[in-house]
Image 1: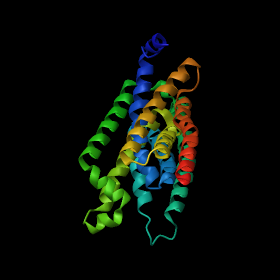
Image 2: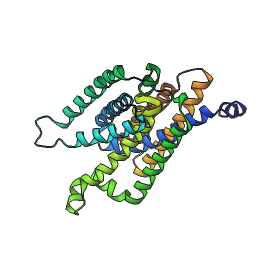
Image 3: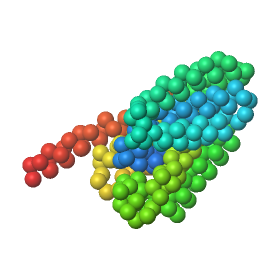
Image 4: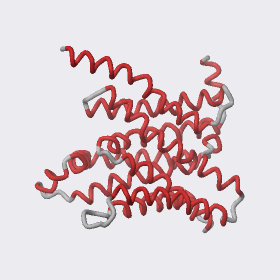
Length: 277
């Protein structure tokens, strides 16, 4: 088995795919903890569609799709964070509109794009095995950049995210730190969707954090478990896809979601023991 793994990952395209899965998947799994605990999962579902719209627009304009994905993600986050209490439509409504508009308009732009259909389709359905060294570098620096940001501003990002009232009382600019968190989220979605599509991006964003939250109550344990689960899902899903000749992206996405089914019985047993004690 070990010899098979060595032979499998001796190919450059497998190394690039694994790098994107590990760095991009681990990054989204980490950020997904904040998405879950802040109850903005619907925002996480709409953002990939807006990122896809940015990719489609970039392909139509013949510019770098990563730049389009990044601009789309940032623009989507800014637009969805603008509606407030005075808006006639609640935030959830705006998110629904963004989801529908992003997915539908992106299809129109794809049809108008001068790029080959296969090239454009790759950015939506995902082709993790078609990643390049440059794609891996993008994912690496997105993960490193986010790690540096959170290392420097961890306390402020966490405090403003989970207790905005206290943050305002202390004079902390909540919108600024929220924008920084969303910037990291948009960057992570951009680098993963650029190579693996929205399916894998959203699965990594919600699957590993859900596993961690079901297993632990400690925030530190949740963060570490989410990252490790995302990395393991990337490795196991890619390996299984190569051995059994399956699509790489969907295999990794499934590997990110299957552990939820496995930990639910553990959570139920713990809950029963807690009620009896």
